[in-house]
Length: 85
Image 1 (cartoon, rainbow, N blue to C red):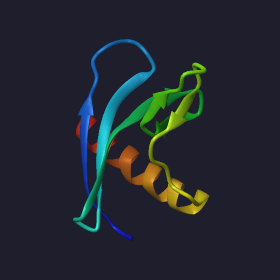
Image 2 (cartoon, rainbow, N blue to C red):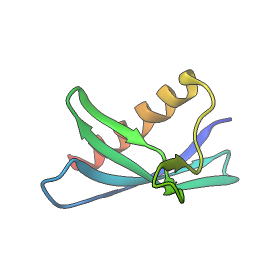
Image 3 (tube, one colour):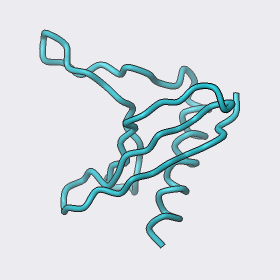
Image 4 (tube, rainbow, N blue to C red):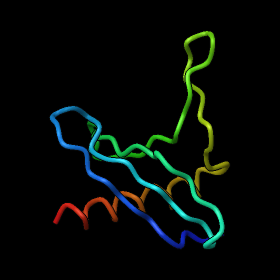
């Protein structure tokens, strides 16, 4: 599976949320509302989630492997940084 498009929208404000991304895979499938968050060790992504009846947040979609999560995070953060220039 290849990432074929990344669209980033910056969020104005002073909080930790810096933007949202939509990532398209193989020109066939897209995941919206991936959050770009500023952390202590740099930016990272948080997958779209929903609140359960118990008040917990569960990811709606997420990478299965750590390797692909790292690949996706690197690509999204790179797109965000290129937008910020």
